[in-house]
Image (cartoon, rainbow, N blue to C red; front, side, top):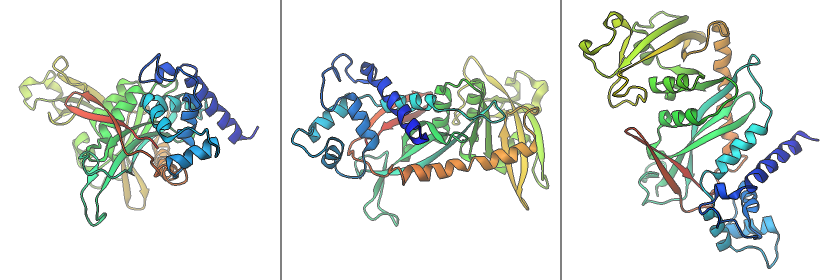
Length: 362
């Protein structure tokens, strides 16, 4: 069997797994998808995955053939409304679990986190996604931001979370995806500078996983407590105690004054609460030379025994595969072609932050 045929068979098997119990993915369980229709649950999922850039009517003709008994556009819309927003994500998770997994050093999965903006149907009445006319667009445009986990060694997306472009929050998106990512092997999250925060570090550590995150000189110096001037290579372990109060009198361990780092109350830190005034964290700070006179800072919690300086240089370059993956997703796979004029939004509050998941019908 060809590899492409094997992948298609796994995808169809995953769709059949969902279709075997459609009540889990129906807005009205026991009612929706309970009747035998030409455009049933399985056919609807097939269509959503194979639709291109034509109008809905042409897409229906392409799928069912040009005949008089082709389901109408209204039938398609009604069936789509019956499906929960999380159904396609469940399909993604089911499919990726069936795929063979490649491991680094025979032990670690490599997951890169990144994002990309996508234009959607123009709607000036949606303040969360609409950008006013400017030099880029004379009419204005609407946009969403896709945050995704990408398995580098397997060349596949494993999870995603979509946010309105004007409310994009990479920190929050990463934390949500890391918390819900069930993994049977240790995972190393490779992230860009946009994810470098104590809250992100803590979420990964609390989930018993690992991270390797690029960091600016300014943030790295704050973590270290000393400047990076003339430092060409560094492998430094930093034990830090995070707290909200700046007052030294409120510190639980005044003898460790050099380890304390103040976290502003406006900055999210989910593991500092009224019951837990301080949070201890152990970080490993790496500084490497990636080209002559050009240096990169990496924050990690990877163990010394498994990873040395040369290993971090290799890992740093591996992350760039995720950037090209978004290009392949958006253009060859037609992610820029959307069929919907409406968005379904479900809000999930976490502390003082508000994030959202948007299901956009292609």
